[in-house]
Length: 140
Image (cartoon, rainbow, N blue to C red; front, side, top):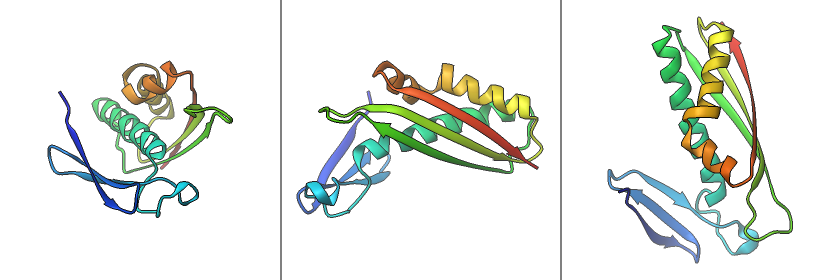
């Protein structure tokens, strides 16, 4: 069982979320709805989790294939449903930018395996009706 503890710290909606290992993330609502810009919006945190989950998968797969990953950045964009409450992620696009002695076909396959098979956050978004798209770039 996973345990996360939240404590209100700033304004009405500024919370610190802490896991059992002591890692903390600041969360807040947007200023338009009463937040004070104390931290990440919860739905943005979900996309951050998607990036972390897929990034771990991809690097792990590439290391097993003896690919040299010297750098890895990612850009994630998303569109939420409009006019609905709750407003779910409707479309999320990821751009994986890898650097190193990496075969593009292996990088593409690693991304595909993560996004379609291993990443639990990706599957969570998909099961909620969200569409996930992605692309991969490799530079020496």
